[in-house]
Image (cartoon, rainbow, N blue to C red):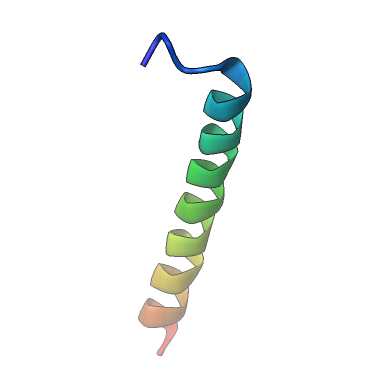
Length: 33
C-alpha cells in the first residue's frame, strides 16, 4: 500500500467516499419506501 503513488491513493480515497455516500443514499431510499 505504501508503494502506491499518492495520486492513485487520493483518487481511490475520493472514489471510496463517493461509494459510501451512494450507499447511504440507497439505504435512505430503502428505509423511506
